[in-house]
Length: 533
Image (cartoon, helix red, strand yellow):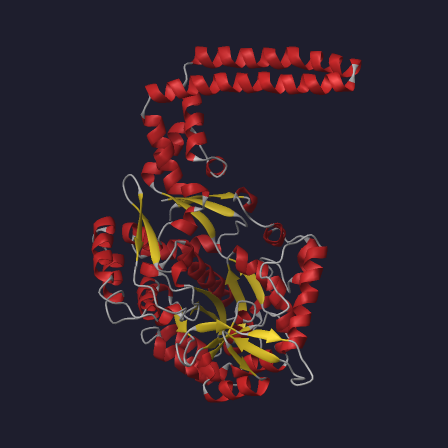
């Protein structure tokens, strides 16, 4: 297995305070979560749903080669759940990170005498096609973005979008970038005209995680919506009650100093409706009660519905009503009797809101844990990091420009470093007593002196930059090294796992990489891993 280093999760930029406190198991977040990371109470499975045999039959149909985990479910195994939108060519790198974490937790529970299987829920009903119609693969000197250009005319569920001939030049480009491999063969077999985005994504990850026994579930069918209709019915009939509970929870989060991940407005509801004419997935909005409509109305686009109308649609065409983000985990867990959900930082944050829906609809709350957070470091980049004595914690704090400045400053001759250091130290040593003296004479004079001193320090820093820029021009490789490191590990100031396509790494290191990721997710490191491939 490749080696890895563990860093505190707060080295990762842009994390919310709520997520950081959750990862640290801070007492302040306890009121918002049923359990905190690495607690094991979740391994005691909840009672099986009444529809258990039906849902296992659906899983068996969708996963015909996964006989072992299906047999485990039939014998009483519980489930660890994760999921993701169905992106082009397998989506971003954090997608297999989620799957690997679910597998790791299922194995840990099974080894502790509580059999579990891992399920990957395909978010095929999400309708933001622009979020999933592209993938980014590293190449030698750039990041190549491949975009499927045929967008649907309406905001239909992305998983149902049928791939056409526009995929063929993208497959050719992927061949050019990834080369021959099992992963590339799987992409070619999955992403071809006539398949939907949901089918292609499911096929690719079924092959990628076949050895680990990952189960894939596309829950967009009418049958699954029929099985999950009690949750959708509760969201219709008790919409006002659930909305008030969410508003109270949001106030409690904000009073505790935390952010609200999913905005809840006066018209918000927990549901989407598929338009029967266009197939567009439209947000259902709630209107206030009135004398004419004491139960209020629901609006989707230009159409209005009574509560009775929506209940009629749910009974006759259950696939037309789907859960929004805050309701989706309750819908999933009702269907699957989930013991544990694996999510990314944003998902973990909105589970703090969803908890009140769990309590009111299911009478219980499912535990959640964060997925594996990691940066994969390829050998060529590892060589540059060692050469320049850099760690990923420093990389996350720098842009390509500032990183190039650092490399240039370090490459400067010793004599130049000493002279700049001496000048800077002398300036600081002489300035401070002078500033203290002038502040003592008069506060206004002290403020003016501080302004002048800051300009002097700026000019000292400018001298350092001038010397570093000269060194960078003399050693052209330094800029190339900085660009390569930034592009590989923190492209554009965004984590590698959110930018690079997973298929790039699966092509270069084989599907065996997924077993490595599962092992890394089993590691007790509570933060971010630097993985040396």
